[in-house]
Amino acid sequence: MEEQALEEQVSPEVRARVQGSFDRQGLMRHLGARMTHIAPGRVHITLPRAAEVSQQHGYIHAGATSAIADSAGGYAAFTLFPEDSTVLTVEYKINLLAPAAGDHIEAVGTVLRSGRTLTVCQLQVFSQVGDRKTLIATGQQTLICLESRPDH
Image (cartoon, rainbow, N blue to C red; front, side, top):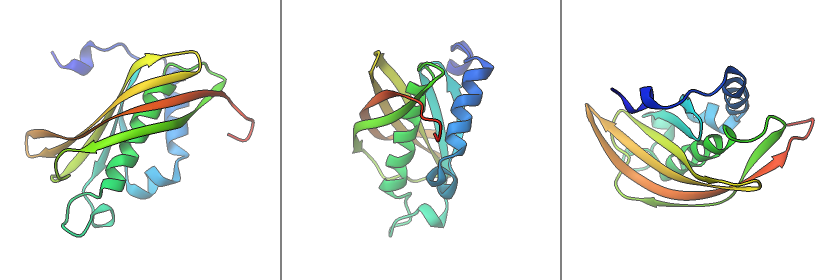
């Protein structure tokens, strides 16, 4: 049985809130990233290989890799936040372990600890080459839960 099948599902309201917020991110839209999995405390974001997100050697750029990792962790935390809140990254660190080669990369954000104000997430990014998945980046992130403002 697949790991994703074993995970709890988020409510339709949480799914809509998380997906709606993701859809408002201009950078994710510009990069061509899409959210591919939403579970309580866990989110996956996939970025296909494209010339627009490459660096000089043809790999997916570290900036694009870092951006989807940051968003995956942020939305993983957001799945556990109250309905009337919003999420912002306080800090994150990422280690690039291997070039981002392959057809696409997938960032996985996983909540390690969800607090009332601060949440800590593990960040992992994998590249997919054929049927082989390789860990290319790992990191950690701290996020803050804020009250929603009417314009956000």
